[in-house]
Length: 326
Image 1 (cartoon, helix red, strand yellow):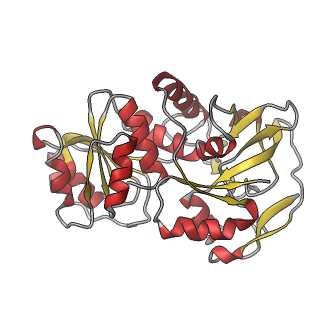
Image 2 (cartoon, one colour; image 1 turned 90 degrees about the vertical axis):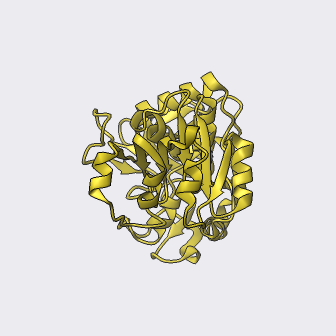
Image 3 (spheres, helix red, strand yellow; image 1 turned 180 degrees about the horizontal axis):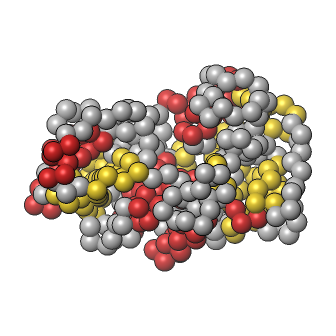
């Protein structure tokens, strides 16, 4: 099959179009003819060698296409071998594209349970952009963060796929949303997607600026931090509020004032991408609240995956970057 092949770890240029062996289905697994594959920051980490993937390798977690066995249009849920418990994955859990060939290819093989019908009204690009970001955001907000209608939420780092999806899901589920960003245009984009307002986190007092936008200035019920700024993020919480963390590209360590934390009665909640049951909850929420498809920033041909990664790493866009298979 034709694919984008990773033969060594490194910068975007290591992603090169090439031939790669066709997948061989195992019992319970299905081959999908891919129409599109969406990029995630996780793909960058795999490309850099952070997950010790085998070489040569095909990366990519997100995809949408057609089942070869039934002809059904499907999206791929890239959460493999999660297990029976919903609070945390099993030791065998992995993300598609980490150690098994992923979606930067014509074909991919996945467990049948990891396929879901393509949502009505979504085109292939939008469908491919949904699974990882949608599943991760749904789990962060609702399964872990316990967000409810009428609550207030701060999203740190507007512009990325998780942050954009969080604004869409939370606002349409009845929560009031404020965002932070390093750029005014990204705040404006988030407001267009459903946020109430935003602050620049380039300002040293941004947590206090954001907190002032919460009801009575008391702080937010929930702060979603997908970038790793939670030493600052916690300052925007109300007493008893919840901080949900799911990323570390801005910082990988965080000093914490332990006494202030426990006197504040805060919840600190770690989360990752969820499971197929979380995905079912996401699909139900999309239908119930008529949530629009994920925002798309740029679409590249599959063979231009290196350029797509370069674009993703500039962090200038708002929404998802997607590869379209010809």
